[in-house]
Length: 337
Ligand code: EPU
Image (tube, rainbow, N blue to C red; front, side, top):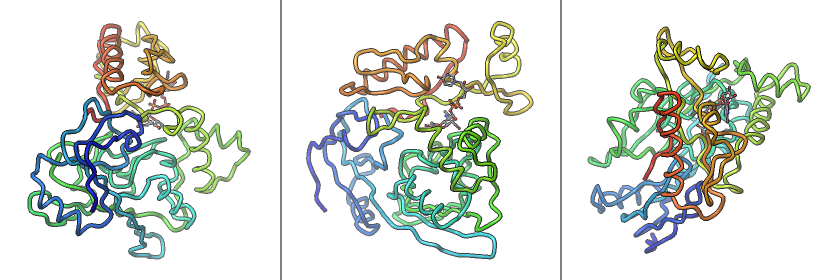
């Protein structure tokens, strides 16, 4: 296994930040990974997946291990369901396309989300009314301490909105190696109630959509709103949508009767951070090479040579302004490194 020194991570993070790794290697098999982890001190390595949910604000003074474990297999088929396993290094969207080609239903709303399969459970990726927790069956993860491979079932992962046990109490303790999804073989349960999907299907003149049609609609919506990381560096939504209390919401609604919102529970309301950021005047703004996307204010972008610190400075400005105007503290969804 080749270990490169002082290696640029620019092409390994979708923000396109030119930070360096003290050492860098790509791992393609589980056994060499276990061997490497066993030989490296716990605080001296950093696991990198697809690099789609990180903002690098500094060089990484560690051994960066890029997980490139590949493979997709069908584990079990019953009359109605199929259990499909994908290795951590599979590119998420390519995996979704594989499931759709085989006419396995469930992941179609999650088409075109950047990143790899291995990081999908970390933050319970979601879009258009679906989160992976809805189809996640289990994952295998390497315990960094014992070097044993353990299985986590759905309930073990404590999934929440962009949350899981791997981001919280087990942070840094496991490396996800593969994920199994339970998908439908027929009688697919389509989720097209999310406004934009219905409208897009109408535009496409499809009245009786298949899972493949839903995927196409999602791809069209995402391409129209979200910048392609290959063209403009970004990490998707930079912030999480904040959840506020009903009481706080009622105060805000008086001044902002058109404020979009979703009821989460009896006492909790979710406000789209994109709307707050747009109201705060940041949509489409540019500060050097760092900026806020013109079609979706929730997405921060790197126009070329922004540093992670410059992007973070824009994020801080946005947080302060939103707090000042709405008394709401928005927090990043992206991991700041
Ligand atoms: N909005 C604005 N201005 C903006 C952006 C949004 O006013 O610049 C308003 C829209 O008008 C709409 C509302 O905010 O009323 C919601 O917008 P949208 O449907 O685009 O979704 P979102 O809440 O901004 C979330 C996810 C996205 C996911 C979409 C679709 C989070 C943090 N983000 O965004 O996920 O694709 O819903 O389901 O929950 C990602 O995590 O990287 C990501 C792209």
